[in-house]
Image (tube, rainbow, N blue to C red; front, side):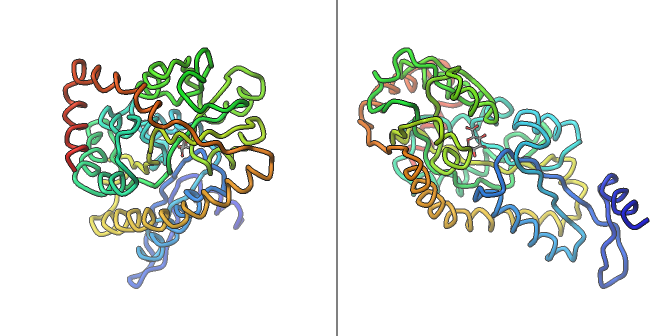
Length: 325
Ligand code: GCU
C-alpha cells in the first residue's frame, strides 16, 4: 500500500510536505543531464537540490536523472520544451541550436584568460545570454565551470596540420563545426553518449573535451594522447522551462535562483580538484598529456572572426563587447 502510494506520488510529480502551516503539496522538478554521478556537476547539483528542499521547507524538490537516462542533451531540451521535464543541465555548445546568443561561448581563443571568462559569465553579458531564450520557453539559471576543451586522439595533435583529414567529433554547434573546418579537420557531430563506441570503432579519429569529462566518460580508454591546446572554454548551463519557473511562488523562484548561483561558486573549487584527479587517473591508464603550439591554433581560427564580421553582425557586436570587458 505504502509502496503504491509512493509510486503514485512519483508519477504525478507531487508529494506532500509538512510546513509550519500544515501539509501542503510539494512541487517536484525533474532535472536531466548526461554525466555520471561521479562528475563534479552532478555533485554540485545534488547539493543544490538539498539546499532548495531545505530552504523551501520541502515544498520544492529537484529530482536529478543523470547519465542521459531521460535522453541525450538535445532530446532533454525537447522534453523540457514539451513540458515533460523542468530543468536540463546542458552546455553552451548544445544550446547554440536553441539560442544563438550562446555562440559567443563556443568561439576559440576569445577569452584572454580564466578571469576574463569568469567575468563575462557572471556579468551583464552572461545574464543577457541566460535570459535570451525566454521566448523559446526556457531561461538559464546559472553557468557551471567546465574548464577548457582540448583535442584527444590516438596520436598527438600539437599543431593544426595534425588535424588534416581527421574526422573530429563535435557537439551539434555550428561554431564548433566552423572551428574544426578552419583547423583543417572534418567535423562530425555526434551525441556525447555515442562517442566512446565511435572512437573505439574508428568512426571518428579525434574528439575534444575538458579533462574530467574525457576521463569520466572513459574516452581515456580509447585515446592515447590528450593534446592541451585549450581552444575553447564552453560553460555548462543549467536551464529551466519558463512554465516550470512560473509555477513557483516568487519566494521559491528567488531561492532556486540564489541556490543555483551558489552551487556554481562551489563548482569552481570542485572543478579545479576534478581536473587534477582525472588527469592523474588518465595518466595511470597510459594517456600522455602533450603541450601544443597554441599560437598556431589561434592563428588558424582567426579567419572565423573575419567571417563573423561580414556574416553575423549581432555576434560580431557581442564579440567586441566581450573583448572590451
Ligand atoms: C562536456 C559538457 C557536456 C557535453 C559534453 C560533450 O562534457 O559538460 O554537457 O555534453 O561536453 O562534448 O557533448
